[in-house]
Length: 187
Image 1 (cartoon, rainbow, N blue to C red):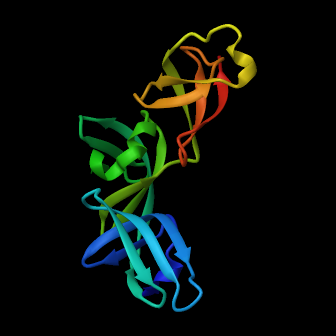
Image 2 (image 1 turned 180 degrees about the vertical axis):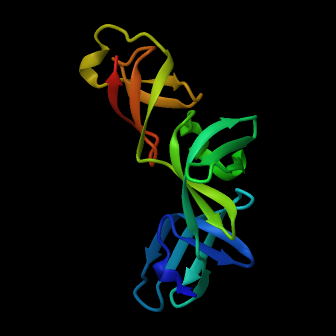
Image 3 (image 1 turned 120 degrees about the horizontal axis):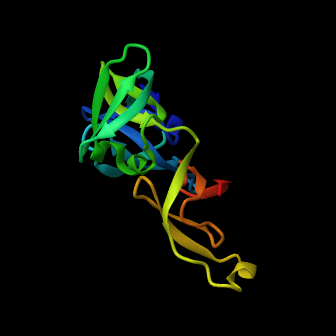
């Protein structure tokens, strides 16, 4: 058992027989009384998101997770397939469980698979990924002085805000934690 004040973004815990991963964590200490901990968490089996409020001092069940390095292979619509790089065993994970992480996956990308009792539950992406821009609007001359951004579509289908100078065919680096443009890798 762990105290709810130990819950932070990324921590996995068990509550009412379900496994949850903390997405957001807020600690509020009013003038009197116990602190209030508000979390937003994702059910690792169903993909559903919940918001929960705890009073400081409450406890939840911690879980022991295993991690394996895996390589993303392909998807067939709503199931994504990964291969363990040591055992070459393949693991399917449903799209609703991956959530927004699916938008960063491209073939052969190495990720860290999270297991609970030999069941693959989640993935941990590298901090940044390089993605090719497949569609970008043409920048209007004179817009560059104001730091104007535009929306581009990358090879995974995800849309990202980038500076106006990014063009179709460019490879850009994207932060997987925030989904934001970092830099242009190759023009």
